[in-house]
Image (tube, rainbow, N blue to C red; front, side):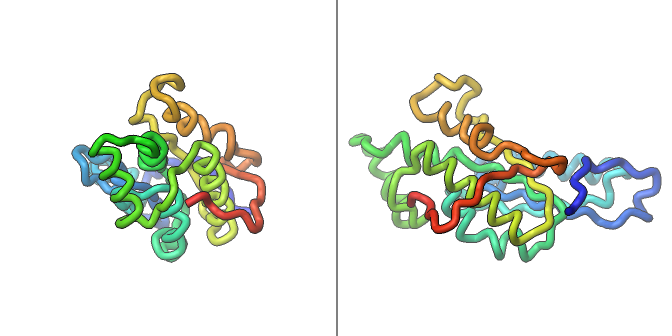
Length: 198
């Protein structure tokens, strides 16, 4: 079993092997819609000599949902042979759920975008998001020895009652894929034969 202890800062980073961290998510990770948390983190890593051995890989794609991450996991994450995977997903999943019945032009356009450009044919309910996240964690654990960190979509609001659906999606990772071992990976039950909802 891989040890997933938090990385320590080395006194001499020249002697430390590179640690590869893949950030897997949507536009918030890709950094296409304004500020990029990954760009800020990369600046910090470059500025700190003790962090020089950490390689940050941006595997974010705008508009992605957990369904899209499942589809591209092999090439975007496993092929990179990471030591850590940071999964930050959920905002677009929430949007598909919030606009599922909207008759407003923006809602119709959002549904059309997810169908045509992301091949997400159905709204992702909180249960679908949870199940998809479980499937993603299971698949990552089966295909990679990397440690896994899950991030919830806090950008849609910190309150679990802020908007219908938003709080349920934000709570799904905590209730559906909690850490179960000494290694701080997110673990989840096996879902053999189960398909994501989209």
